[in-house]
Amino acid sequence: MARFPFHSRFNKMEATTNPQQQSSLDNQNRVAPDKIMPHPLDNVVDPSPHNGTVLAILTGMFELGRNRALQSGTVESRADDLRTLEDHARAMARDTYRDRFDPSLNPHDKMRQTEYQRTLKQREEAEIASRHAVANLRDAQVQLAKTRKAGERPRANGWLVAAFIVAIMISLSPTLHDFVFHTFSDDLLAWFGALVTSAFVACMLTLAILTGRRTTWEWIGVGAGIVLGLGLGILRLSSAEGGDEVMFSVGLTIFEIAVVLLLEWLASGLRHDDEIWAARRDSENEALELCDAKQADLSRCESLLQECEEQLARTILYVEDRHNRNIHLPELEALVVKSVLDGYDSGVTENIGRVRGSSRRAV
Image 1 (tube, rainbow, N blue to C red):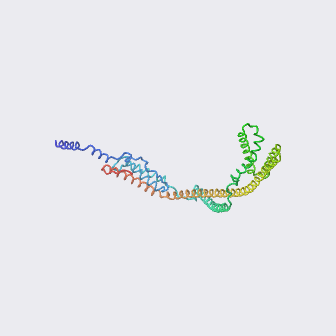
Image 2: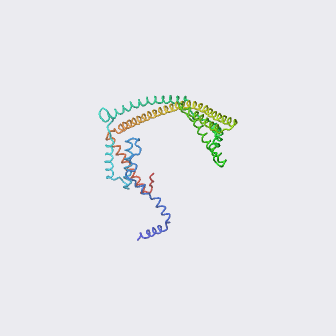
Image 3: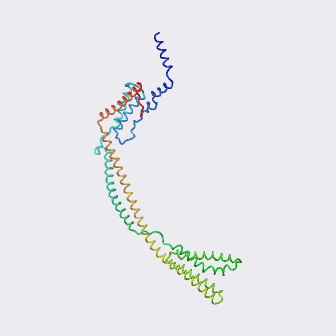
């Protein structure tokens, strides 16, 4: 009967407890399942192989034992778990063990050493070639710096070209108005047609003479201009009445021929400047191509040198790993077994801490 008063007091205490406080207390004591129940292989595989194989297996076995204990939730060591973990640890130790790197005993080690020696020779050749490539590139850059820059292609001044076009239009427009567009009833329309036509002819003649660059046929432009002027002069003389009109026709023809000859003089200067520009351009392009070729040769040598360095580094890491794995097998097994048992004991300790209410959250 003495139990009932205690039971009643317990019920009263439970009833007077604030539900929110009780929920907060439960949340504090509760640990997330993904934190207390890790995957069996969490942190077992080392993501940083450069730390060394032996260190990686010791760390992995520690985490494996700890995960085993956390998953089982045991608060004391279990013989089955210990036996399984020890067997697994010894198997991993035997799998980790390697013979010492010895080319005199192992044919594959001899092949690797031969490849290593060949890569060393290639690296020496690549270093020499790289030094030569650097010197050649420096000489090419110096040559490029000394080469005179071609700059922009020579061209006639735009205002001067426009002046020649206007001058030819002035001489052509009256002739075209009087002999070609005289049939138009509207005089304004006749002058407009004459101006447009003379503008086209003037542009054709001016640009043909100024832009012609073929030395064999360079006289074609000036010859066509002179023939055009003579033809227009004959056309004017055919309808000239009186000495004034004859003199005007002759003077206008001489003016047209003078404009064409002046254009040819300007074009000859442009052709000379263009020849100089072309020679400089060819020299500059040749220096640029030589510099690009030397740069490509240097890049190829540096790439080959980097490949040799990487191959030598991989071989050195392999030999170092073989050396580190060449531990006395019983000693290696003892180290791995101790590591996995330490991890198991750590997990058991964490389980005991959670049972006692002092669990820690896993990071």
